[in-house]
Structure formats: C-alpha cells, structure tokens
Length: 112
Image (tube, rainbow, N blue to C red):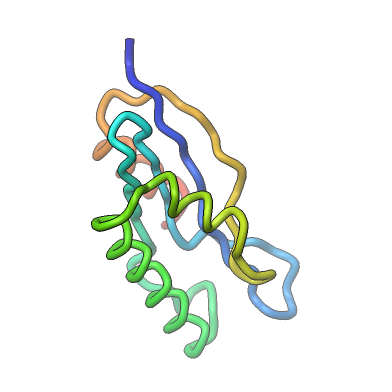
C-alpha cells in the first residue's frame, strides 16, 4: 500500500482582486515529518514587483525552515497565522508512491 501524504497549496490574493492564486505546492510526508515545498519560478505573473519579492522570499524562507524544522509544525503554524493575502488550503490527504514525482506533478498542475 502506498504511504499517505498531505497536500496543501500556498495561495496569494492580489490586492483589489478576489482571486486566490497558487504560489507554492506543499507536500507533508507524515512518516518522516518532512515538508516538501515547490514555489513558482517567478512571481511577477501573480503580483506586482514589491509583492512578488515578498512572495519569493516567503517561499524561500519556508524552504529553508523545512530543512531544519518539523514539517508538521511548519504546516500547523501556516494554518494558524497567515494573513489575508497569503493563505493555505485545507490539507488533502493522498496516497503517493514517490514524493518527488508527486511534487513535480502537483507543481506542473498548479504553478504553471
């Protein structure tokens, strides 16, 4: 049987718009408590220059934190503290054969 993982999208609501745009894919492997994060290649398609810089740095910091901290704890913090403009979806539990290829597929589906 394939192991479970929890999938979450990090989303941005551009000021003046009521549309949530995905900026990163997060995949928590509960077996190892690792949070895998894949952000957009560029953020200017979803935000103005200043916000794009903030979004890029936010994702970069999350990726750095995921190397040294509990993935579950990071995800819980995100779920409880994000702003009105940056949010996470509810967790979607899914069976995955390979975290890397699943992250690739989710990123292609949501971040292009």
